[in-house]
Length: 473
Image (cartoon, rainbow, N blue to C red; front, side, top):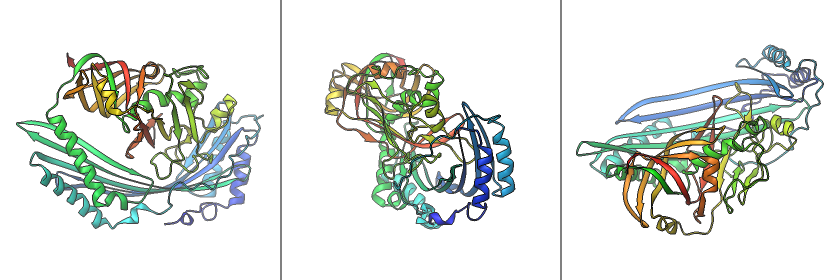
Protein backbone atom coordinates (compact mmCIF):
# COMPACT_ATOMS: atom_id res chain seq x y z
CA UNK A 1 0.00 0.00 0.00
CA UNK A 2 1.38 3.41 -0.91
CA UNK A 3 0.64 6.87 0.35
CA UNK A 4 -1.39 7.49 -2.81
CA UNK A 5 -4.23 5.33 -1.48
CA UNK A 6 -5.54 8.02 0.88
CA UNK A 7 -6.06 11.38 -0.82
CA UNK A 8 -9.01 12.97 0.98
CA UNK A 9 -8.44 16.44 -0.50
CA UNK A 10 -8.67 14.95 -3.98
CA UNK A 11 -11.54 12.53 -3.37
CA UNK A 12 -13.71 13.27 -0.32
CA UNK A 13 -13.14 17.03 -0.26
CA UNK A 14 -12.67 19.67 -2.90
CA UNK A 15 -9.32 21.06 -1.82
CA UNK A 16 -9.98 24.67 -2.79
CA UNK A 17 -13.38 24.67 -1.12
CA UNK A 18 -11.98 22.95 1.98
CA UNK A 19 -9.23 25.56 2.20
CA UNK A 20 -11.80 28.35 1.96
CA UNK A 21 -13.85 26.79 4.78
CA UNK A 22 -10.75 26.40 6.93
CA UNK A 23 -9.70 30.00 6.33
CA UNK A 24 -13.13 31.26 7.37
CA UNK A 25 -12.95 29.13 10.53
CA UNK A 26 -9.51 30.47 11.46
CA UNK A 27 -9.99 34.13 10.49
CA UNK A 28 -8.65 36.12 13.44
CA UNK A 29 -7.27 32.93 15.02
CA UNK A 30 -3.66 32.12 15.90
CA UNK A 31 -3.54 28.68 14.36
CA UNK A 32 -5.60 25.81 13.01
CA UNK A 33 -5.73 22.93 10.55
CA UNK A 34 -7.74 20.09 9.10
CA UNK A 35 -6.28 16.73 10.12
CA UNK A 36 -7.56 13.80 8.03
CA UNK A 37 -6.69 10.21 8.87
CA UNK A 38 -7.19 6.66 7.63
CA UNK A 39 -6.08 3.74 9.80
CA UNK A 40 -6.22 -0.02 9.28
CA UNK A 41 -5.14 -2.46 11.97
CA UNK A 42 -5.01 -6.18 12.59
CA UNK A 43 -4.38 -8.10 15.81
CA UNK A 44 -4.21 -11.78 16.73
CA UNK A 45 -3.97 -13.41 20.15
CA UNK A 46 -3.17 -17.01 21.00
CA UNK A 47 -3.65 -17.92 24.65
CA UNK A 48 -3.32 -21.35 26.24
CA UNK A 49 -3.03 -23.12 22.86
CA UNK A 50 -6.18 -21.51 21.43
CA UNK A 51 -6.74 -18.50 19.21
CA UNK A 52 -8.65 -16.24 21.58
CA UNK A 53 -9.17 -13.29 19.26
CA UNK A 54 -8.47 -12.09 15.74
CA UNK A 55 -9.61 -8.69 14.54
CA UNK A 56 -9.28 -6.36 11.58
CA UNK A 57 -10.40 -2.75 11.84
CA UNK A 58 -10.52 0.19 9.46
CA UNK A 59 -11.46 3.76 10.27
CA UNK A 60 -11.20 7.19 8.76
CA UNK A 61 -12.25 10.69 9.65
CA UNK A 62 -11.10 14.26 10.09
CA UNK A 63 -10.76 16.88 12.78
CA UNK A 64 -10.83 20.67 12.32
CA UNK A 65 -9.20 22.97 14.85
CA UNK A 66 -9.17 26.73 15.40
CA UNK A 67 -6.83 28.10 18.08
CA UNK A 68 -7.05 31.52 19.71
CA UNK A 69 -4.79 32.27 22.67
CA UNK A 70 -5.13 29.50 25.24
CA UNK A 71 -8.44 28.32 23.79
CA UNK A 72 -8.90 25.78 21.02
CA UNK A 73 -12.11 24.80 19.26
CA UNK A 74 -12.12 21.28 17.87
CA UNK A 75 -14.70 19.28 15.96
CA UNK A 76 -14.35 15.91 14.24
CA UNK A 77 -16.39 13.53 12.14
CA UNK A 78 -16.24 10.13 10.49
CA UNK A 79 -18.17 11.56 7.54
CA UNK A 80 -15.65 12.69 4.96
CA UNK A 81 -17.99 15.16 3.22
CA UNK A 82 -17.98 18.86 2.52
CA UNK A 83 -21.13 19.30 4.59
CA UNK A 84 -19.49 17.64 7.62
CA UNK A 85 -16.47 19.90 7.11
CA UNK A 86 -18.67 23.00 7.12
CA UNK A 87 -20.41 21.94 10.34
CA UNK A 88 -17.05 21.22 11.99
CA UNK A 89 -15.80 24.66 10.94
CA UNK A 90 -18.82 26.37 12.47
CA UNK A 91 -18.24 24.56 15.76
CA UNK A 92 -14.48 25.16 15.94
CA UNK A 93 -15.01 28.81 14.98
CA UNK A 94 -16.82 29.43 18.31
CA UNK A 95 -13.45 29.34 20.11
CA UNK A 96 -12.13 32.25 18.05
CA UNK A 97 -14.87 34.70 19.04
CA UNK A 98 -14.15 38.20 17.74
CA UNK A 99 -10.66 37.12 16.74
CA UNK A 100 -7.82 39.59 16.81
CA UNK A 101 -5.15 36.95 16.38
CA UNK A 102 -2.56 36.58 13.64
CA UNK A 103 -1.87 33.18 12.10
CA UNK A 104 1.40 31.71 13.27
CA UNK A 105 4.13 30.91 10.77
CA UNK A 106 3.45 27.46 9.24
CA UNK A 107 5.74 24.48 9.89
CA UNK A 108 8.88 24.38 7.81
CA UNK A 109 8.98 21.92 4.95
CA UNK A 110 10.85 18.65 5.27
CA UNK A 111 11.62 15.68 3.08
CA UNK A 112 12.69 13.38 5.91
CA UNK A 113 11.26 9.87 5.73
CA UNK A 114 12.03 7.85 8.82
CA UNK A 115 10.17 4.66 7.88
CA UNK A 116 8.65 2.81 4.97
CA UNK A 117 5.09 3.47 3.79
CA UNK A 118 4.51 -0.24 3.08
CA UNK A 119 1.53 -1.86 4.78
CA UNK A 120 2.87 -4.26 7.46
CA UNK A 121 -0.44 -6.15 7.53
CA UNK A 122 0.27 -7.35 4.01
CA UNK A 123 3.68 -8.69 5.01
CA UNK A 124 2.31 -12.20 5.66
CA UNK A 125 -0.95 -14.03 5.12
CA UNK A 126 -3.41 -14.50 7.95
CA UNK A 127 -2.78 -18.27 8.08
CA UNK A 128 1.00 -17.77 8.27
CA UNK A 129 0.57 -15.44 11.24
CA UNK A 130 -1.66 -17.94 13.03
CA UNK A 131 0.85 -20.73 12.37
CA UNK A 132 3.63 -18.61 13.85
CA UNK A 133 1.71 -18.00 17.08
CA UNK A 134 1.10 -21.74 17.41
CA UNK A 135 4.78 -22.40 16.72
CA UNK A 136 5.77 -19.99 19.49
CA UNK A 137 3.51 -21.86 21.91
CA UNK A 138 4.96 -25.25 20.92
CA UNK A 139 8.52 -23.94 21.08
CA UNK A 140 8.17 -22.63 24.64
CA UNK A 141 6.46 -25.76 25.93
CA UNK A 142 9.28 -27.86 24.46
CA UNK A 143 11.95 -25.65 26.05
CA UNK A 144 10.98 -26.39 29.64
CA UNK A 145 8.45 -28.75 31.24
CA UNK A 146 7.66 -26.06 33.84
CA UNK A 147 5.81 -24.04 31.17
CA UNK A 148 2.07 -24.32 31.82
CA UNK A 149 0.69 -21.43 29.78
CA UNK A 150 1.79 -19.32 26.80
CA UNK A 151 0.25 -16.16 25.37
CA UNK A 152 1.48 -14.73 22.08
CA UNK A 153 0.05 -11.75 20.26
CA UNK A 154 0.82 -10.02 17.00
CA UNK A 155 -0.41 -6.61 15.89
CA UNK A 156 0.14 -4.47 12.80
CA UNK A 157 -1.32 -1.22 11.55
CA UNK A 158 -0.95 1.47 8.92
CA UNK A 159 -1.92 5.08 9.64
CA UNK A 160 -2.14 7.60 6.81
CA UNK A 161 -2.56 11.28 7.64
CA UNK A 162 -3.01 14.47 5.64
CA UNK A 163 -2.88 17.95 7.14
CA UNK A 164 -4.26 21.06 5.44
CA UNK A 165 -3.35 24.42 6.93
CA UNK A 166 -5.08 27.80 6.35
CA UNK A 167 -2.10 29.32 4.51
CA UNK A 168 -2.43 26.46 1.99
CA UNK A 169 0.35 24.16 3.26
CA UNK A 170 -0.58 20.52 2.59
CA UNK A 171 1.36 17.72 4.33
CA UNK A 172 1.23 13.93 4.26
CA UNK A 173 2.67 11.07 6.32
CA UNK A 174 2.22 7.30 6.18
CA UNK A 175 3.11 5.45 9.38
CA UNK A 176 3.47 1.68 9.71
CA UNK A 177 3.59 -0.10 13.07
CA UNK A 178 4.00 -3.69 14.21
CA UNK A 179 4.53 -5.54 17.47
CA UNK A 180 4.98 -9.08 18.77
CA UNK A 181 4.51 -9.89 22.44
CA UNK A 182 5.12 -13.19 24.25
CA UNK A 183 4.15 -14.07 27.83
CA UNK A 184 4.76 -17.34 29.64
CA UNK A 185 3.70 -18.82 32.98
CA UNK A 186 5.82 -21.48 34.68
CA UNK A 187 4.92 -23.69 37.64
CA UNK A 188 7.00 -25.65 40.12
CA UNK A 189 5.86 -27.21 43.40
CA UNK A 190 2.57 -25.33 43.21
CA UNK A 191 4.18 -21.92 42.70
CA UNK A 192 3.48 -20.01 39.51
CA UNK A 193 5.41 -17.07 38.07
CA UNK A 194 5.34 -15.21 34.76
CA UNK A 195 7.66 -13.48 32.34
CA UNK A 196 7.14 -11.54 29.14
CA UNK A 197 9.10 -10.04 26.27
CA UNK A 198 8.31 -8.35 23.01
CA UNK A 199 9.29 -5.79 20.47
CA UNK A 200 8.39 -3.94 17.31
CA UNK A 201 8.55 -0.61 15.58
CA UNK A 202 7.65 1.26 12.42
CA UNK A 203 8.66 -1.61 10.17
CA UNK A 204 7.17 -4.62 8.45
CA UNK A 205 6.48 -7.92 10.21
CA UNK A 206 9.31 -9.74 8.44
CA UNK A 207 11.90 -8.95 11.10
CA UNK A 208 9.67 -9.95 14.01
CA UNK A 209 8.61 -13.16 12.28
CA UNK A 210 12.20 -14.23 11.59
CA UNK A 211 13.01 -17.33 13.64
CA UNK A 212 16.00 -15.83 15.45
CA UNK A 213 13.90 -12.82 16.46
CA UNK A 214 10.84 -14.52 17.97
CA UNK A 215 12.88 -17.32 19.50
CA UNK A 216 15.01 -14.71 21.27
CA UNK A 217 11.86 -13.08 22.68
CA UNK A 218 10.47 -16.45 23.75
CA UNK A 219 13.70 -17.38 25.52
CA UNK A 220 13.81 -14.02 27.28
CA UNK A 221 10.22 -14.37 28.51
CA UNK A 222 10.99 -17.85 29.83
CA UNK A 223 14.23 -16.68 31.47
CA UNK A 224 12.40 -13.94 33.40
CA UNK A 225 9.68 -16.36 34.52
CA UNK A 226 12.27 -18.87 35.77
CA UNK A 227 14.16 -16.13 37.61
CA UNK A 228 10.95 -15.10 39.37
CA UNK A 229 10.23 -18.72 40.23
CA UNK A 230 13.17 -18.68 42.65
CA UNK A 231 12.74 -15.07 43.79
CA UNK A 232 12.56 -14.16 47.47
CA UNK A 233 10.29 -11.48 48.97
CA UNK A 234 11.74 -8.02 48.33
CA UNK A 235 13.07 -6.03 51.28
CA UNK A 236 11.51 -2.74 52.35
CA UNK A 237 13.48 0.38 53.18
CA UNK A 238 15.81 2.92 51.60
CA UNK A 239 18.42 1.41 49.29
CA UNK A 240 20.87 2.35 46.58
CA UNK A 241 19.53 1.13 43.23
CA UNK A 242 21.18 0.12 39.98
CA UNK A 243 18.76 0.38 37.06
CA UNK A 244 19.39 -1.71 33.99
CA UNK A 245 19.64 -0.31 30.43
CA UNK A 246 16.86 0.02 27.88
CA UNK A 247 13.29 -0.57 29.07
CA UNK A 248 13.91 0.71 32.65
CA UNK A 249 13.97 4.10 30.91
CA UNK A 250 10.19 3.93 31.37
CA UNK A 251 10.87 5.34 34.85
CA UNK A 252 12.64 8.30 33.23
CA UNK A 253 9.76 8.68 30.78
CA UNK A 254 7.09 8.83 33.47
CA UNK A 255 8.85 10.49 36.39
CA UNK A 256 10.74 13.10 34.36
CA UNK A 257 9.50 13.14 30.76
CA UNK A 258 5.91 14.18 31.42
CA UNK A 259 7.14 16.95 33.67
CA UNK A 260 9.12 18.38 30.73
CA UNK A 261 6.12 18.69 28.38
CA UNK A 262 5.35 22.28 27.51
CA UNK A 263 1.72 22.53 28.61
CA UNK A 264 2.44 21.47 32.20
CA UNK A 265 5.23 24.04 32.43
CA UNK A 266 3.30 26.87 30.82
CA UNK A 267 0.52 26.32 33.34
CA UNK A 268 2.99 26.00 36.21
CA UNK A 269 1.74 22.56 37.25
CA UNK A 270 4.98 20.65 36.58
CA UNK A 271 7.60 20.00 39.23
CA UNK A 272 10.06 21.50 36.71
CA UNK A 273 8.11 24.72 36.04
CA UNK A 274 10.27 27.85 36.31
CA UNK A 275 13.54 25.91 36.50
CA UNK A 276 14.84 26.59 32.98
CA UNK A 277 18.62 27.03 33.05
CA UNK A 278 18.94 25.57 36.52
CA UNK A 279 20.69 22.41 37.69
CA UNK A 280 17.95 19.78 38.01
CA UNK A 281 20.04 16.61 37.76
CA UNK A 282 23.50 15.35 38.59
CA UNK A 283 26.30 16.56 36.35
CA UNK A 284 26.80 14.22 33.43
CA UNK A 285 23.06 13.54 33.07
CA UNK A 286 21.78 14.44 29.59
CA UNK A 287 18.20 13.64 28.59
CA UNK A 288 16.82 13.89 25.05
CA UNK A 289 13.54 13.41 23.26
CA UNK A 290 14.27 12.33 19.71
CA UNK A 291 11.55 11.59 17.18
CA UNK A 292 14.01 11.28 14.29
CA UNK A 293 15.42 7.78 14.94
CA UNK A 294 14.55 5.64 11.88
CA UNK A 295 11.97 2.86 12.31
CA UNK A 296 11.53 3.43 16.06
CA UNK A 297 8.13 3.04 17.68
CA UNK A 298 8.02 6.63 18.95
CA UNK A 299 9.39 8.29 15.80
CA UNK A 300 7.37 10.50 13.45
CA UNK A 301 8.57 12.12 10.23
CA UNK A 302 6.23 15.01 11.02
CA UNK A 303 4.12 15.44 14.13
CA UNK A 304 0.33 15.70 14.00
CA UNK A 305 0.48 19.45 13.35
CA UNK A 306 2.93 19.10 10.46
CA UNK A 307 6.09 20.14 12.33
CA UNK A 308 9.10 17.97 11.48
CA UNK A 309 10.17 15.88 14.45
CA UNK A 310 13.43 16.82 16.10
CA UNK A 311 16.28 15.69 18.32
CA UNK A 312 15.51 17.85 21.33
CA UNK A 313 17.87 18.16 24.28
CA UNK A 314 15.85 18.56 27.50
CA UNK A 315 18.54 18.28 30.18
CA UNK A 316 22.20 18.84 29.35
CA UNK A 317 24.92 17.96 31.86
CA UNK A 318 22.29 18.19 34.59
CA UNK A 319 20.92 21.61 33.49
CA UNK A 320 17.32 22.04 32.27
CA UNK A 321 17.62 23.48 28.75
CA UNK A 322 14.37 22.65 26.96
CA UNK A 323 10.77 21.51 27.01
CA UNK A 324 8.79 19.48 24.48
CA UNK A 325 6.40 21.76 22.62
CA UNK A 326 3.43 21.67 20.31
CA UNK A 327 2.61 24.81 18.30
CA UNK A 328 0.10 26.35 20.73
CA UNK A 329 2.22 26.07 23.86
CA UNK A 330 5.38 27.08 22.01
CA UNK A 331 3.71 30.26 20.77
CA UNK A 332 2.35 31.12 24.21
CA UNK A 333 5.78 30.54 25.77
CA UNK A 334 7.63 32.47 23.05
CA UNK A 335 9.71 29.54 21.81
CA UNK A 336 9.86 27.28 18.76
CA UNK A 337 7.69 24.19 18.32
CA UNK A 338 9.79 21.04 18.72
CA UNK A 339 7.79 18.50 16.71
CA UNK A 340 6.02 17.06 19.76
CA UNK A 341 2.42 17.95 18.86
CA UNK A 342 0.78 14.51 18.83
CA UNK A 343 -2.74 13.11 18.94
CA UNK A 344 -4.21 9.62 19.26
CA UNK A 345 -6.42 10.01 16.18
CA UNK A 346 -8.51 12.45 14.14
CA UNK A 347 -10.98 12.48 17.06
CA UNK A 348 -8.45 14.20 19.34
CA UNK A 349 -6.77 17.59 19.43
CA UNK A 350 -2.94 17.57 19.58
CA UNK A 351 -0.94 18.28 22.72
CA UNK A 352 2.75 18.12 23.73
CA UNK A 353 3.77 14.47 23.88
CA UNK A 354 7.02 12.52 24.07
CA UNK A 355 8.43 10.51 21.15
CA UNK A 356 11.60 8.54 22.06
CA UNK A 357 12.85 9.82 25.41
CA UNK A 358 16.21 8.63 26.69
CA UNK A 359 19.28 9.42 28.76
CA UNK A 360 22.76 9.37 27.22
CA UNK A 361 25.31 6.93 28.59
CA UNK A 362 28.47 7.55 30.59
CA UNK A 363 31.78 5.70 30.60
CA UNK A 364 31.42 3.24 33.50
CA UNK A 365 31.43 -0.53 33.12
CA UNK A 366 27.91 -1.71 34.09
CA UNK A 367 29.36 -4.53 36.20
CA UNK A 368 31.22 -1.94 38.26
CA UNK A 369 27.93 -0.25 39.17
CA UNK A 370 26.58 -3.45 40.73
CA UNK A 371 29.93 -4.01 42.44
CA UNK A 372 29.51 -0.64 44.18
CA UNK A 373 26.30 -1.69 45.92
CA UNK A 374 26.87 -2.47 49.60
CA UNK A 375 23.23 -3.32 50.24
CA UNK A 376 20.91 -2.51 47.37
CA UNK A 377 18.72 -3.60 44.49
CA UNK A 378 19.60 -4.22 40.86
CA UNK A 379 16.34 -3.47 38.98
CA UNK A 380 16.46 -4.92 35.47
CA UNK A 381 12.80 -4.90 34.36
CA UNK A 382 9.73 -2.79 35.10
CA UNK A 383 6.00 -3.27 34.88
CA UNK A 384 3.31 -0.73 35.63
CA UNK A 385 3.77 2.53 37.47
CA UNK A 386 1.99 5.69 38.57
CA UNK A 387 3.22 9.28 38.58
CA UNK A 388 1.86 12.58 39.90
CA UNK A 389 2.98 15.21 37.36
CA UNK A 390 2.64 18.11 39.82
CA UNK A 391 5.33 16.80 42.16
CA UNK A 392 6.97 14.01 40.16
CA UNK A 393 6.24 11.35 42.79
CA UNK A 394 6.32 7.86 41.29
CA UNK A 395 5.65 4.25 42.23
CA UNK A 396 6.98 1.53 39.88
CA UNK A 397 6.79 -2.24 40.19
CA UNK A 398 9.80 -4.36 39.20
CA UNK A 399 9.28 -7.42 37.02
CA UNK A 400 12.91 -8.53 37.43
CA UNK A 401 15.13 -7.42 40.31
CA UNK A 402 17.97 -8.75 42.47
CA UNK A 403 19.20 -8.16 46.01
CA UNK A 404 22.86 -7.16 46.08
CA UNK A 405 25.13 -7.18 49.14
CA UNK A 406 28.78 -6.16 49.16
CA UNK A 407 28.80 -6.06 45.37
CA UNK A 408 27.49 -9.60 44.98
CA UNK A 409 24.09 -10.66 43.69
CA UNK A 410 22.46 -12.64 46.52
CA UNK A 411 19.10 -13.63 45.06
CA UNK A 412 16.31 -12.45 42.78
CA UNK A 413 13.51 -10.64 44.63
CA UNK A 414 9.80 -10.45 43.97
CA UNK A 415 7.32 -7.70 44.75
CA UNK A 416 9.79 -4.81 44.75
CA UNK A 417 8.38 -1.34 44.10
CA UNK A 418 10.49 1.77 43.65
CA UNK A 419 9.11 4.89 45.31
CA UNK A 420 10.40 8.45 44.93
CA UNK A 421 10.08 11.62 42.91
CA UNK A 422 11.64 12.33 39.55
CA UNK A 423 13.31 15.62 40.43
CA UNK A 424 15.05 14.17 43.49
CA UNK A 425 15.98 10.92 41.73
CA UNK A 426 17.76 12.88 38.97
CA UNK A 427 19.98 14.61 41.53
CA UNK A 428 20.90 11.28 43.15
CA UNK A 429 22.31 9.65 40.02
CA UNK A 430 25.91 8.81 40.91
CA UNK A 431 27.28 6.81 37.98
CA UNK A 432 26.22 6.24 34.36
CA UNK A 433 27.11 3.05 32.50
CA UNK A 434 28.47 2.89 28.96
CA UNK A 435 25.66 0.62 27.78
CA UNK A 436 22.91 3.04 26.73
CA UNK A 437 20.15 1.15 24.93
CA UNK A 438 16.68 1.85 23.64
CA UNK A 439 13.77 -0.39 24.55
CA UNK A 440 12.78 -3.16 22.09
CA UNK A 441 9.73 -1.23 20.89
CA UNK A 442 6.74 -1.80 23.13
CA UNK A 443 5.87 1.49 24.86
CA UNK A 444 2.48 3.21 24.78
CA UNK A 445 1.94 6.45 26.70
CA UNK A 446 -1.31 7.79 28.10
CA UNK A 447 -2.11 11.44 28.75
CA UNK A 448 -5.50 13.13 29.15
CA UNK A 449 -7.21 10.02 27.80
CA UNK A 450 -5.06 9.84 24.65
CA UNK A 451 -2.65 7.00 23.89
CA UNK A 452 0.32 7.23 21.52
CA UNK A 453 3.29 4.93 20.80
CA UNK A 454 6.58 5.99 22.40
CA UNK A 455 10.13 4.80 22.94
CA UNK A 456 12.35 4.96 26.03
CA UNK A 457 15.99 4.29 26.79
CA UNK A 458 18.86 4.77 29.20
CA UNK A 459 22.17 3.26 30.27
CA UNK A 460 22.68 1.30 33.46
CA UNK A 461 22.80 3.85 36.26
CA UNK A 462 23.34 4.00 40.00
CA UNK A 463 20.87 6.04 42.06
CA UNK A 464 21.42 6.60 45.76
CA UNK A 465 18.69 6.41 48.37
CA UNK A 466 15.43 5.34 46.73
CA UNK A 467 12.63 3.89 48.84
CA UNK A 468 11.83 0.27 48.09
CA UNK A 469 8.45 -1.12 49.02
CA UNK A 470 8.34 -4.82 49.78
CA UNK A 471 8.46 -7.15 52.78
CA UNK A 472 10.26 -6.20 55.97
CA UNK A 473 14.04 -6.47 55.59
